[in-house]
Image 1 (cartoon, rainbow, N blue to C red):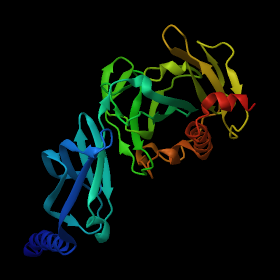
Image 2 (cartoon, rainbow, N blue to C red):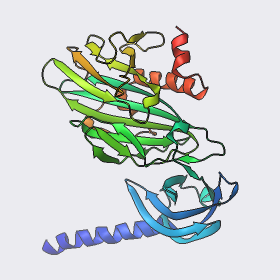
Image 3 (cartoon, helix red, strand yellow):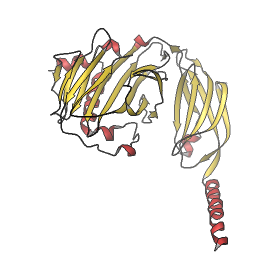
Image 4 (cartoon, helix red, strand yellow):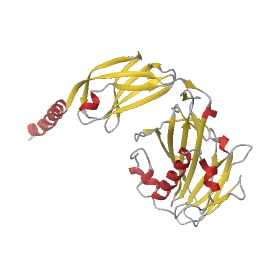
Length: 339
């Protein structure tokens, strides 16, 4: 019996090793770098190959690359996509290669851009939703960023600063670039009380950022502070609240505009002006029927580039509506004029 028990793990290990060997292949990846700002051959400070399985597993890295080159003899599992991550002047450029032989055999072109540190070149729209749950306020923020620099450049000013209250729990976020459905989980750098920094460059085109956190609740009366940082030039933000029977007021705006047209059922919505002195507001809330989470908190994950399954279908509709007007260049002013 002892011999049998000792043999089982060995057999499993050998079997697993054989399976990995059988279902992987040696592959060389051809890469071409192009600079979209100068319309010339590109270069990069480094390139990484990352295996995308249950987590992101780096399997190759090379420094100081340029033009066309080949990454030789990578052992890639047949069913796993890989990510090329090119770093150039503080900006990361990602390209996913699906586990399709024909696509793996192609030359992988990655376009890099020269940087600009002028955040004023960035067009920004944002919104926030606050959901009153039984034991916490669940806060969601979404940012739609548009980089239309000409010639195209990446925008990087030591990252983007985002307000997150000091007592926030379960902070998570994702970053989706352009038409990609691959959301990148965000890592936050704690700058100071209430200030978190996302150390990423905004590439040409459209970028979507999703942020989520919880604030613990005690009693039936509660408050939430919010502040504008890199998005402060907007001066205001639409704020959606759930449930509708929750009383709410804003310290910076005694008479916020009530948004009604095209607001999905189950949400109350306001266009809130933040204070001109410090670009902040204090949201005072009372009562309300607690909302049950759609999925348990411990089961949270990014699905198709979004936390949207946990947010709810109503907020998804609002985000889609805001995104439509943002893309066609009308923005929130046009939304308000439709009323």
